[in-house]
Length: 190
Image (spheres, rainbow, N blue to C red):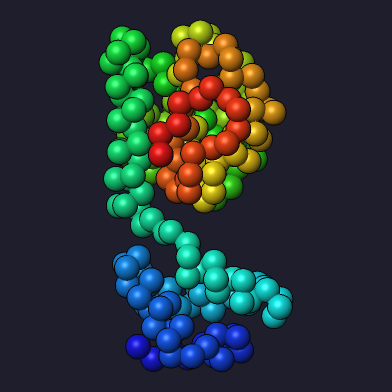
């Protein structure tokens, strides 16, 4: 595939690297015009000295299109469903928790996950609203849509609230690279 980049760093890439990028794009099933336009724009955000690192990230990142993300959410949701069945807890007591600091991807992923899991939008709540619920009868489900161990994710939420009094807490991780290393007794579905 022939692509004419605007970014000088991308223009300088050899055929082997360009083939690896194209392989990723094809695997991710993204329209070529959209992908390469966005890739060029994304690289323009970096200083020249950081672009080789950005390339390394691009070639190692795991991307989920909406269909794959929904399938991943349904798979990780099985542990929550099993818990609900074993404890005879109604699904109406489940809260999908989103950060108080909202972002486009977090809101979009929460919406996609709620659709895939059959949770109404009324069961998506921010951390700041959790004190309104009877904690001993509320099951919290966090969605971690970032790559890594989840340790930072857990630490940030744990600093914002006390998990201990809730009936149960789950973290649905789309792209954990390994189990979280934070010393919390949480149920992690990866």
